[in-house]
Every structure is written in structure tokens, then in C-alpha cells.
Amino acid sequence: MVLSSLPLVFAGFATCHAALITVPSASQLRYQSTDFVALIHFNIETFAHNTGCDSSNWNTLAPYATGKTRDPATFYPKKLNTTQWMESITGLGANIAVLTAKHGCGFTLWPSKAKFLDGRPYNYSVGIPGASIQYDVLRKFVDSAQDAGVGHGFYYSIMKNFYLCHDFNGKHSCLSSVLPGQQNISEEEYLHMAKQQVTELWTQYGNITRIWVDSGLGGLGPLMDQLQPQAAGTPLNPIDWCGTESGYPSRDVGSGDIWSTGHGYFGQANGTQWVPKYCDPQLFREHVWFWEPSLHVRSLAEMIPIYHDIVGRGMVMELAFSIDRDGLVEESHAKVYRQLGQWVQQCYASPLAVASGKGYVFNLFALREGQMVDRFQIQEGIVMGQRVRNYTIERSSSNGWVPLVSASAIGRKRIHLLPKSLMVSPSMMIRLRIENAIAEPSIKQFSAFAPCPDEMIPLSI
Image (cartoon, rainbow, N blue to C red; front, side, top):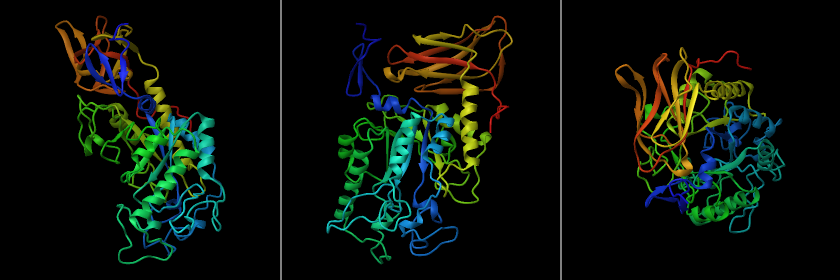
């Protein structure tokens, strides 16, 4: 057996020429197999105002709201169709979808059987007396996802629950006053309730692909690993946030190389734990997660640079899906998801030339005279780890090799856009030259592409 081609994997490391190389778990590989994750925001906040629960809407019918947020009957999607959601999710090209099972208000989309310490029921969910929806929304979502071949996941904000007197920041919010309908309980009882609910989530809906826990784990990380050891987003299979929800991490966080090893916004080249990175932009131009009337949807032309800044730098894009009050993906949203998915396919599914394999130099022999090239895509075979440390894409000339791009990290995917298109001349060669690597590089794909217009014509709408 040749160790450089068949690494021995032990607890996140591969043995290769006596050096330890950090490698992903099967769960992390599954997570990084897709450019897109659908991050579905749909809960009682959809029917509120300011997309959250606070004193302005808990016992008051706020502007644009359909009811008081303390009332479970306010959650009433009359045309709920989770199969319709999957049409947009698969049209985008996502193969994982995460639904807000419980967000900051505390309302649960499943009939939670959790009880307070005195035996009282939780009483703020679907399926209870007085609720407009008497079925399990999560079950419908999971069934539709499985039918569509999409991995399912749940968002649960452990430290946020306005119903239980924990505000948006995860702090006790009822120290001075308790609103009617709120449950002012101790921190011990709060965590007792959270543990019951996540146990329901993590045991009743099969194997979860992605777990999304917001605002801290509340000491429940070991339970997560125990009940869903195959899920990404757990302490056992960590992933890290890119540092911004704007869609522009280069502008807001920094344009440095992204490593799937090590924690933090950028990771570390020599990190000893595999930690994929993700960014979670909204489809709205406004920084709003849940559906509201009169918000502005980003166009395809606006989404393309976001794609390049996230996916093109090695991260996964967890793109927001804001389900409307009917329980559907609004058509103006569905159009952009379709267009973005089609654009990715039309731009990156048919390269002009491809090279792959193991080694340090990869030539694009299939390029033909007169072809125009303006972008390159590189992918490492990350099952072997992120091995490359420095590389250059260069073209031949009468005076030798001329650099086009130089960088450090490749990882799951790296896209480089040239400042202007390059015409292939009769004797021109283009190659990827890896200058430094911690072990023999494994390149899944090095490809050149023709210019891709900002809006491909025709796009089905």
C-alpha cells in the first residue's frame, strides 16, 4: 500500500510520509459537497413585525402583523407546501436544507411534549389547543426533503426564547417585568426545557445532515454528539461562520485565504482540526431574515459577486429562504433561486479544458487557438486534506512563463477571475504550478472557462 495515495485516517488526521495531515470527517465532506445550503426562515416571526418577539408585538397587534406573537394561532400558513420549497431549493442547486424549528420567539414548529418542572406543558407550538396549525410542520419538511434527495437539518436557538424570558441576546429579559403569557423561570429550568426540546429534535426525525444552534450550546454539545454523531455543525464535526451576514466577506471581514483547517473566520493553514467555513447571506437587500412585505429581493446580477466572494473562496453559501405567510416560496424569490442555479450551471458546468490528478504541475492541453478565457476554477481532493500552500496559474510566452494568478489556499473550491479576458494564441500553454505543499497535492479539478455574462440569456423564469 502506498501511503501517499491511500492515507490511514485516525480521528481527523491522515498519516502520509510520517506527517500528520488534517482531513475532514464523512459528515464534513457531505457538508462541503454542495455550493449551497438552504437556510429556511419560517416561524411565528413570519407573521410578526420587526421579525421577532418583543414588548411591541407580544400582546399588541403591531403594524403588518397578523396577530399577537404570544398567540399560537397567529402562525397560520393557509397554503403551506414544503414540496414547493424543494422546487426552489433543488433549482438553486442546494442539497441540504435547514429549517428554523425554533427561533428567538420560542414557538416550535413541532408539537413539543416538553414540560416545565411542575408538569405544565410547554404550550407555545403547533398542534396544541388553540393553535391554527394542528400538524407537525417539521415532519412535512423532512418528508419533502427526503423525496427531493435533500439532506435536512434544523435551526434551534438554545439561548434565545422570548416566551421563556430570554431575549435576542440570550439574556434573562424578565428581571424588571414579565409580560402576560411569558414564563419567568430559573436558568436551571430553562436549560431543562431546552434539553427536552433538542432531544425531541435530534431523535424524532432521523439522521440530520446539518445542525444549526445559535447563541451558544448551553452545555448541550455532548448530547448533540451523542444523538446525531453524523451531523455537521456539532462539536464532533464543527463548521465555522465567515464573520458577516452581508454576503460580502472580503469587504467586511477581509480578503485573505480561507482554510478548512483551524477555527476562526479564515482558519489556519496548519490547523489541527478540520473546520469548514460558511457564509449566510440574505436574499433581501435589507438585513432581514424572515419574510416581510415590501422588502427588496436581490437580483441575479447582485448575487453573482456574492457567489464568487463566498463559494469562490472555498466556503459554503447558506442562503436564506424567507417563506411567506401563505407558507410558500414567493415567486419573485423563486425566480432568483432558479436564475442563480442556472447561472452556476451555464458558467461552470462546461469548462474549456480540465486537468486533474496528483502532482505539482497541471497543464490545460485541451485549450484551442482563439478561445477566450477569463476565469479558472481549482478544487483539491479534500478527502486527502488541504495540502497546497502556494500556487501560481501562468501562461507561456516567448520570454518564458507569465504569472496570471498567485495565491495560497485552494480547498473545496477556488475561483479566480482575470481582470480581462485572455485569448489563447497558437503556441500558448496555461498551467497550474504548485510551489509549496505539505504533501503531494491531489487536484480534483483545474479548469479554464470562457467569459460568462452577468445574466445568461435565455434564462427560464
